[in-house]
Amino acid sequence: MRQLNTVILLAVLIASGCVTAPVDAVKSGRRPMWMDNPHAKYPLRYYLTAVGEADSLKDAQSIAVGNLAKIFRSDIKVEEHLQERYFELMGDKNSYQEKSQFDREVRVSSDMSLVNVQYADSYRDTVGRIYSLAFINRHQTSKIYASRLAENDERTKNFVKKSKTEVPAVEYAALSAAVAISSDSQLLLEQLDVISSVAKKEISMSYEHDQLLQQLADAARRVHFMVSVSGDQSEKISGSLESLVTDMGFVIDKRAPLKINGVVAFEDTDLKRGDLSFVRYEAKIDVLDISGQTVVSISKRGREGHVSKAEAEARCLRTIASLIDCDLKTKLQKYFDGLVK
Image 1: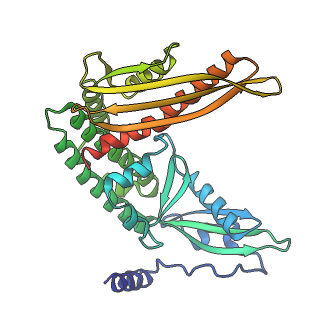
Image 2: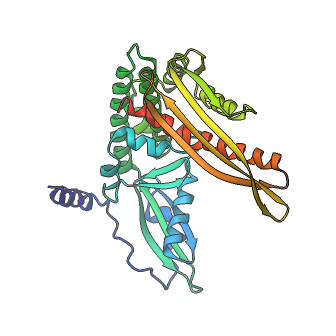
Image 3: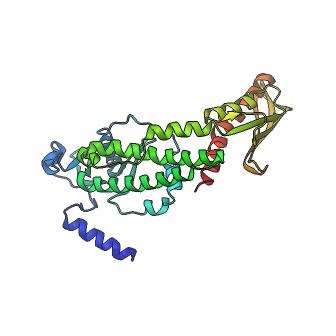
C-alpha cells in the first residue's frame, strides 16, 4: 500500500510540474542563466530560491539551504531540544522522517528548519567550483504547512483538554506539552508568512500562544518540590537544584509531596600529577513522585585536579552542577511528558 501511495504521489507531482529530477551529475560548460538570475527560470511568484557555492555538491547544497534560510525572519527562538521533544509528543517521529523528498525537513540551525526544500540545477565552473540552486515551491509547501498546522492544532487541543485535572503535576505536564506543540506552530506560521502571506491568513489556530504560556506559568506555580542534599557542606549543589526547580517555574516547599533527594561525597586522593592535586567526587540525585517512587535518577563519579585541593573540589562542584543543568533537567521534562503521552 505504501508503494502504491508513493507511486500515486509521484504521478500527481510530475503531472503538476512540481518534480525536479535528482542531481546525478554536475553540469559543466557554459555558465547557466540561473546563476545570475534564478527568477528567470523559477519565478519569484511561485518559488523561493537561493544559490550555494562550494568545492563539492553536498557542501554547495548545504550553503544554498543556508542562504535560503536567510530569506526567513528568525525572531522566534526555541529551546535546544524542542524539535526532538516535538516529534516525541506527536508520536510520529519515524513516519514523519520517512516522508517523501518533497516534504522532508532540512535542519538549518539549532532554531531553524525548512520544509520541502528541493535541489534543482547544479554547475561546475572552469576552476572546479560547484554551484547548486535550492528552492521551495510556494504553493506546494503552503499545503504542507497548512496540514502540519492543523495537526498541531488538534494535538494542542488534546493536551489542553488533559490539563483539566486536579493533579498539579499532570496539569503542568499537559500544558507544557501544549506549549511545545504551539511553539512549533509559531515557527511554522512565521515561515508561512514568507512563503505565502495569503495562505497564512487562511490559518486559524484554536489557542493564542501567549495565553498558553501564561496558563503554563500558573500551572507550574502549583507544582511544589522539596529539595534535600546530604554531604553538601557548601550548599552549592542544593542551590543548583533549587535554581533548576525555580527556573522551570516550580516552587520550593519543605513539605512538598514531590521530592528531589541528593547525596554528594568528596574524597582527597594521594594522586599527584606535577603540581596538581586531585579530589574524587560522587553524586547521586533522585526525583520522587507523590507516592515516593523514584521517577528520575542521575549519578556521576570521577575526579578533578588543580593546584589546590580547594579548587579541585570547586571543579567537582561545577561538574555536578553542569550535570544537574543538562541531564537532570532533560530527564525531568521527559518525566512530565510521559505523564500525558
